[in-house]
Length: 630
Image 1 (cartoon, helix red, strand yellow):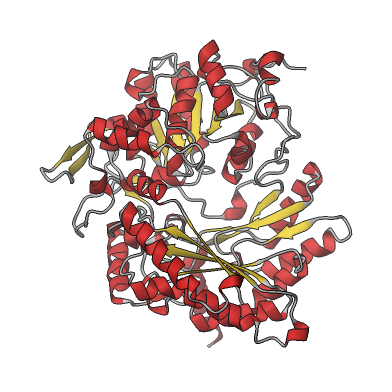
Image 2 (tube, one colour):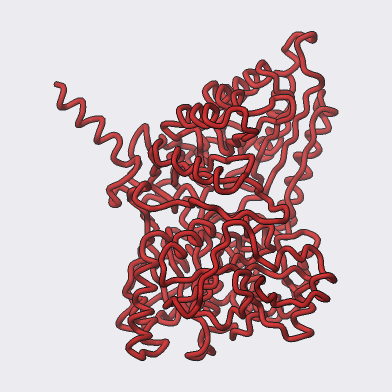
């Protein structure tokens, strides 16, 4: 049995000691003397959240398949252990070997959500690694960030040596090989960073200078090192079946947020919702083949003993072979107690038919995401969903036996009016009325409609990156307008309305579109006790507001300020595959209320065609086939 980093006394005094001991099913442990690179991989949140993350499991599996690389995991210690580690000066350690993170060659941190940024500093701090890249020595690990938030790395730029922009399966091994080459040659830390900067998708913040105009906007963003390119292009897997997946997922011993096998069926999305960052940065849509998915579904369920498999994508209904895959899983695991989960389905007749096959209708609710209360605003955001389609989907679901509906909306989107806000209550009422169209003797009890609204955050690489964001007071006022309208509804007792935290949303907006001047605010908030900001019971808004004041940074500059079309954004040096010209056209289409067809209906010229893969080429193949027949 391996020696644990924490004593029995400490483990018995904290919540969920299983977070810190490792030893999970399918854990990989290697002899550090037999590898060339030791990579500590961190998810900056509590173990139950991080251990469920698909991207981390994919890269953990990928790294450890290579014999000369050892990949181990580390998560944010919960607040109880955090205090003990500081008091007793215990360095943060990995789960597999229980060794200090500071002894590794790399510390990789996945950046999934802006509100985990203070936890990034916690991981560095407890690891006894200098917070600032400029203060690190030859003995410190190379700190690299990746994930969706790396598409605007600037608020975290001083804390990272490198950022990996894009999908991890493509050039990570190139980066490791350069490290090994530099190490054998006796090269310096800077020499490795210069080698890394020449790899596509790798961004070294120290090799760039930013200048600002008198009004605070960016004047220029330029390389200061000859090895650094002017633009960094995202990395993308062109052929999804060309990369391996997870054969033996890790199985936690304590309850994780997603206690199931996750099978990624495709990447990207054809829909083009104008608020959605993922729908843009993961373009074009690329599918796994049916045979590939069958193999890994069987491998993962067999190697874990999990009783549920989730089919993961941004829009599962758009996967070409969804029905065949679901039928295969039903037939293969019939009578073996395996449930099939289907998130991200569009509610149409096909999706309902698939869901009926795999869900217990009596126990489950059906989920719609109209995102806006009026058709006008759904056209503005390019949701591609009409009220007629929504109500038909609800009627079909009710007829199939469902009587619980969850509705997701977003408040504060560009051009939103009072009528749009009140439309959330009106649409919820219409769905409830659709249920009562069913003869009383055929109903399955009382209908339950739960409507939830998040608050809009403009994200980089979306058509709404130019949009003004509401203030905290405006968000709360809008939520109250919706709540008041709900109280007027005839079926009020069957309706429930929830909304997100406004203060948290405003802060998310700053971190999403911030530049390097936001970094001192993050550090100051952390020093003032901000940690686990994504957990409402631990969020300390006052610490953040004090940090903005102490650093002399105007919060409203990053949120409620209007932006001109020619403004240089902090992330403009990244080529994410969608051109700025396309995003501008979509912003103008949004303001005009014009709908853009999805990628299978017509090409909108977003720029993703340059990758030569995915759905961008489907229309061409179809045309070529027709041409050959004529």
